[in-house]
Image 1: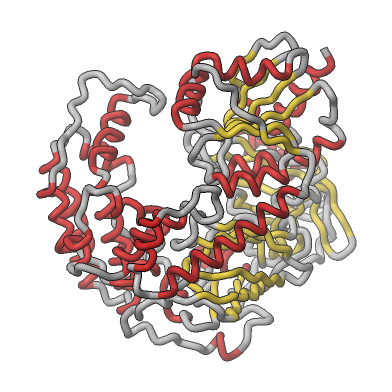
Image 2: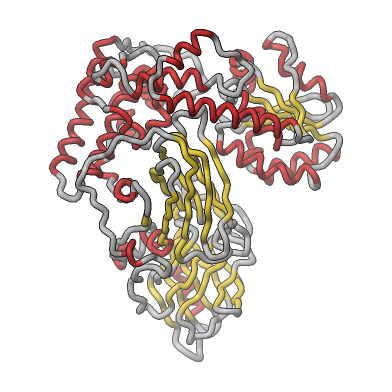
Amino acid sequence: MKNLLLVMLFASICSISCKESARTIERPTFEVRNTNTLEIDKIILTDTATIFYIDAFYRPKYWIRIDPQTYLQAGDRKYFLTGSEGIELGKEFWMPESGEASFVLMFQPIDRKLKKIDFIESDCDECFKLYDIDLTGKASPAGYPEGLPRELRDARPDMSGSLPEAELNIGTTRINLHLLGYRKGMSNGKGTIYNRHVFSPDEVETVFPIDEEGNASMEFEQYGTMRNLIFCASGLSFSFISSPGETLDIYVDLQESGRRGARYLKAKNTPKPVLYFTGQYTAINQAINNPNNKYKLELQDRKTYDEIAGMNADEYVDYVITKYKDISEVMAQSTDLSAIEKELLDLDNKLLVHSFIINGENQLERAFRIKNKIPGEQRELKNYNAPRFTKKHYETLKDLRIDGTTYLYAEMFPFIYSMYFTGKTDLEMITGHKEGFLYDLQKIHRLSRKVGTRIPWTDHDQAELASVKNPFYANVLSVLDKKFQKQLEDAKNKTGYTICEVPKVSDEKLFDAIIGNYKGKVVLVDFWATWCAPCRSAISQTEPLKDNVLKNDNLVFLYLTGPSSPEIKWLTMISDIKGEHYRVNEKQWNYVCDKFGIDGIPSYVLVDKNSNYKLRNDFRNHETMKKTLLEEVAK
């Protein structure tokens, strides 16, 4: 990775060091960091400069940037960046196909007596930061982090049992998060928790504050045992199970997390847990967060799609089942997995098999597209004979049954459970029973879509709900209905947004009819959906600018979504998004997306003052969007 230019640079710097010989620290250790992108290959200390040789690892053809205000810090003293080689400061640096690159950063000379130093890439929230970089070359592996209760440090959860039946009740759950080793400035002081409800119509996303000590608390209404996902501390994420109504403490060893992801320190690191849990599901949560990827069934990789391309239904089903049996045999013989770990892994492996066989037509079409490099927006496929799946193919799943509420422990289940209700499979074949959890969930799945809407319940709906024996389900629907109604009332009291009536015209004239309401103005049309995290993130970046930088009577923010955005979720969410809002039906959405060749969301169409329009997906770069909008309104 190092090129001749970098070697010559080092020789040049060494030649001007006349007072004291240069000192080199090879692949230094660090305490905590907020990035897995930068690895320090070596640091060279001379009388005239401090030189960091850095290797970057990032997604191919994506860019990184090093701010010119980057500095090193020791106590109150800052040592500023003086130059670079191999990267232009403040400019986008595009990663090569390999996803690996090298560059050198030069700083002012530091006090040679220093034993450690911080690398701070400017003071922005998302900038790269590495703390307590060792300059002695003698740092020993760290022990348990300060703040971790001794009872958790010494605890060894019993993982020898089996998964219990999940709980079906309602309660307010409290999570106390402790980021051990957290430093002020290593993130934006916020985290996000995603509650992956199965009994509620959609996933709930909540942003929570992290204090300067790295502590946070959050509460949420929980319906049954549930998987949650937390993002915090600049990219760190993990999932866990919570019990309705419990108080759960989670301790995160940020030092262990950072070092575990460090390519150059793995040989120096004796792995310890990154996460420590209290609560009812301690053993299960520890098992979930133990790295056991070698036992996870791989069906969504490029190799699989290359191998299944061109298969018929019989060949495909045999292929998937064989892959599952092979990984199951390896897992059964393993001695490094507990009983609970094996059961959790098998649960997700089975669900993946269920998903791939039930959705076999889509998977084989995708393989054909990948092999022939056919984009998703090209609807018509020539020379493709879609394989025909019949009941005999789905019956192969009867040997891979999952019983009862243990589904709720699986990572995949909240995303794919609706596949059981498409009519392709028979629930008795999947479960081995004529009633039970999936049967109840099938009824509630449909009824929950009516909760909080203006669609009245029918006598059939009421009878279906009454046929569900467990009162838990009716209680959930009642709680959700009251919650959504309150959200709607709160939304009505907010201003700055407009719910617009969709013009009653043909699909071909729809877009022109919508933008015709804003003649003479610049219109940014944002194609989005309530469930789309990148859409919401992009909107959150733009929202604060509407009252200052982008405030202009001749600039209109227009948001277009389709029926995949649930009406209640849409109505409550747009109350915090200033602009004009349209929600079209599926046929209209598909036509408009085809009209512009929308390849995913968020996507943007820019309409100028003369009503000329063009797809502008370069607006996914927020700075490009802002700059272009300012130029257009100034014309």
